[in-house]
Amino acid sequence: MQKKLTITIDERVYAGLHTVVGRRLISQFIEALVRPYVVGKDLDVAYEQMARDEARQAAALEWADATVGDIADEAVR
Image (cartoon, rainbow, N blue to C red; front, side, top):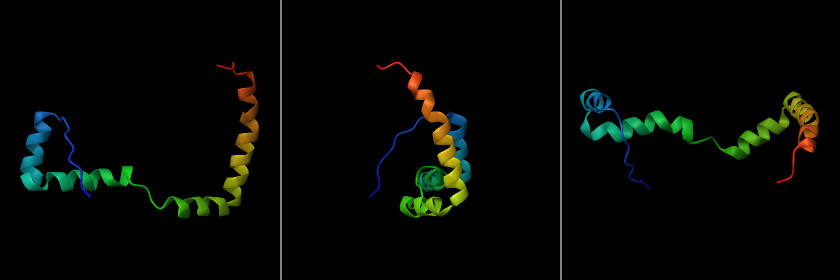
């Protein structure tokens, strides 16, 4: 499903999009640029790969152990 989005951009950027990309292709152009930054890979697969990385898990545990004491001094809100 597609959604309509209204954005505000500089008039020179707008003119450049029309000149370089073409009027009817701007949406596809912007989506192709933005997609890798906002649509993640399958998170389950990524988490499984991270869990199998023993060095990464050890570093994460070391970091967690080192920082857990930091919150002990925080005031309760």
